[in-house]
Length: 222
Image 1 (cartoon, one colour):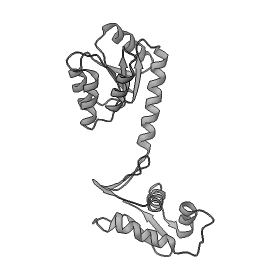
Image 2 (cartoon, helix red, strand yellow):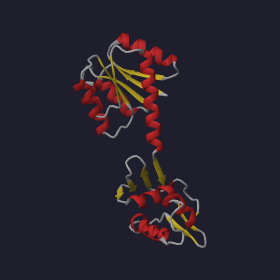
Image 3 (cartoon, one colour):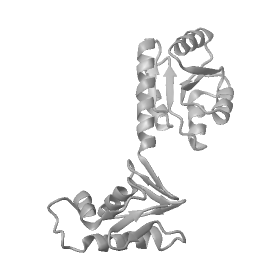
Image 4 (cartoon, one colour):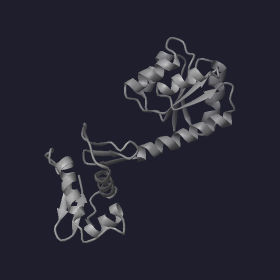
């Protein structure tokens, strides 16, 4: 795991770099905000540990510019002030967590582990089939850059199929997983909702993702 440490205090840098490397992390250091921005943009980092009081460009501005540029790398901000306004400002600008100096190194490690877990979970919340993306946290559905509005039931049906791309499901299997075991199996509700989905997911696009397997059921495949 690769960490970018943006900190101008040499004593803190030496302590943190040595400790993190002993824990198995790869650490790259920037001593001011401009250098931090440059490294963050050019390098592939799993986490950015970012001090607020930096020469040239402060940590708030570094975080703001990174998020504005679409950089989603988790940011852990460090500050010498236990000030609520500073914490709120940093979080509003896109920081993921906050740590007030002085802090125990074990707490820093714990926060790093927690951020990595959350980031991995967020990445796992995106389902992709072809050019279709489904964000399970925000419930946003896109084909390419186009956002597609779905009802709750349409979303649940699409999510179920997208969890198993290429796999064919019978109408009964779809009913059981999306509507529940108590739903009336003789209903044609699955065909109706597949039609709804096709109108939104497939009809406006050249490439079709929802496929009928005659005599069996349906599948989603890119």
